[in-house]
Structures are given as structure tokens and as C-alpha cells.
Length: 226
Ligand code: SF4
Image (cartoon, rainbow, N blue to C red; front, side):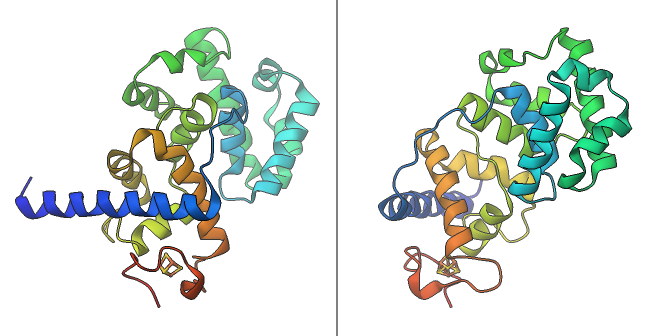
């Protein structure tokens, strides 16, 4: 690593620490709490791809209400799964992905209890999840973050946008690579709170089309301030 690269990373770490503090002063420090069990989080996250929270929650609830267990979803005809999740969009693709993921997990471990991931190191746990069809860095990070409280950083559209505007990452970095680049620069104990606060800030203040820079608590450290 060149001296210039190392200087740039150090200055970004400093800036991220300032952002963590400024966001916590505004929104508070967010404590981790279990959102769903790991398998439910995995299936929910597949359903949430390319749709809103409201639609994916509705699709997930319909699916669980109808089938009651992951085993019954695994054995159900794809059209029956599709019928329960149509509110989440892309129902055909998601139904076959869910069925395939459940089949592979069952063949691999003989159950749907993936709590063993908590015993693995982060790289191994991510890699096990990413070996499943249609599961990328974002879904893997969401499951490890929300169901196990591991210090990983899911990068959604808000976090990706803000990280570029605030120059936490280079403009040419893609969303998949952003996960690990950001993770390495954030104190592990602050990752969850920072993740939640950045999303909140992206929704309320630094939105995609009309960022409210005048009201933004990060405007003193933001090179994109308008
Ligand atoms: S100053 Fe503007 S562009 Fe920068 S983070 Fe705040 S709202 Fe976004």
C-alpha cells in the first residue's frame, strides 16, 4: 500500500468516526436487537429484493401463514409459493429461488437451523451464505447483522449513496465491494448503530434527488454539500 493510499484510508476512518458521532448525537445510539430468526431473515431478505419493506413484509407474512414451516415451503409447487408472495414483485423468480435455497440447505445440513453460522468467523459465514443461489454480499450481510449481531455492514441503496457523497469510498467502487471496504474502516462495536443511522439519514435528509444539505448534521464533513 502506498503512503498516499494509507493516508487516504486514515483520513476516511477519521471522517467515519466523526460521522458516527454526529449521527448518534442526532438520532441516538441504536442498540442491536434480534429482528427475526436466521432462516426467516434469509427468506425475508430474498423477498425484499427490488421491492419496498411494506410489500416484502406482506409477502413474507402470507408465505409463513400459508405454509407454517420451511419444510412445507421446500416441498410446495413453485406456483403455490408464487401465489403467496406476488405482493413482493418478481414472484416467479423469488419463488423458485426460495425453493432452491431451502432444498440446498436441507440437503447440506438436514434441517433449517443455520444457527451454526454464529460459530464461524465472518468470512466463512459470509462465504457459506453466498454459496447459495441468488445470495449476494448484501443478503449475506443482512442475515449476519440482523440475526446474529455480527459486526458486518449491509450496504443498501442509501448507505451506498451516502458513502460516495461523503467520500467514505471511491466513486468507482461497486455496491458489492463496498461492504468489505466500509466494514474494515468502521469500529466493529459501532457498525450496527452506524448502519441504522445512515439509512435513517438517507431517508430523511440525504435523499437521492433532493438532499437537504442545509439541515444536514454531516455538512461540515461532506465534500458533496450543495
Ligand atoms: S451535506 Fe448534503 S450531500 Fe452531504 S451528506 Fe448531507 S445532505 Fe447528503
